[in-house]
Length: 210
Image 1: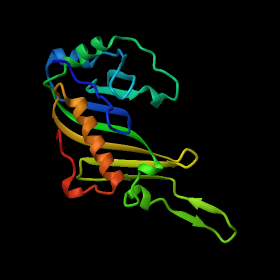
Image 2: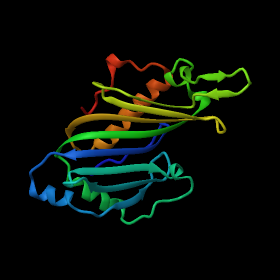
Image 3: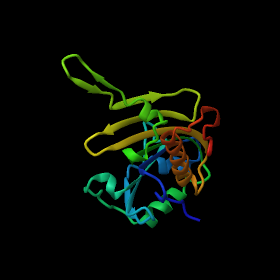
Image 4: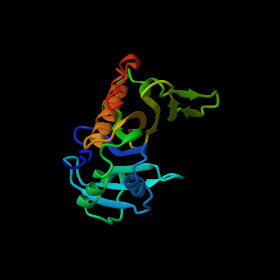
């Protein structure tokens, strides 16, 4: 069974990054991690045409880096395709079974109407008006957390387009399997949904895949 790529279905996610710090002494895997080739392919999930880019980096070549994004994320500029999807999946398959520390990040784009007034994003949409009539709005915020799977959240209000752009980062650890990319996508989507609805509960933080 091949590694499953994110499907971008029923989610506002536009881009997913999963960076796995591999912990291994296996010479075969170490050799793969030392490669400098960047593999980019396109695929067609239900959410529309998407691209996957896979490579390794790090001073010791210990990071397996995968980006997946919908074509709409690139504002009309398409990435240069260098490989077939099958080639990328075959290369990723070689890392299945490896232990890793995993950082997953996602970018979500929502309309203003999708954001609950109870959400953190809406409650921190502050506006200040000076005596001289000058108006200032808090439109970009970033927060970081400790001792939670959710380590970072930042967002910006694009007032001209009436959109909210949310970036999330979560961390976990475990064994890379065929589902690890899609699992990261699900965790980020659930976390984003809870934050947008104003129902995110720290005591029930999503630990799937950790």
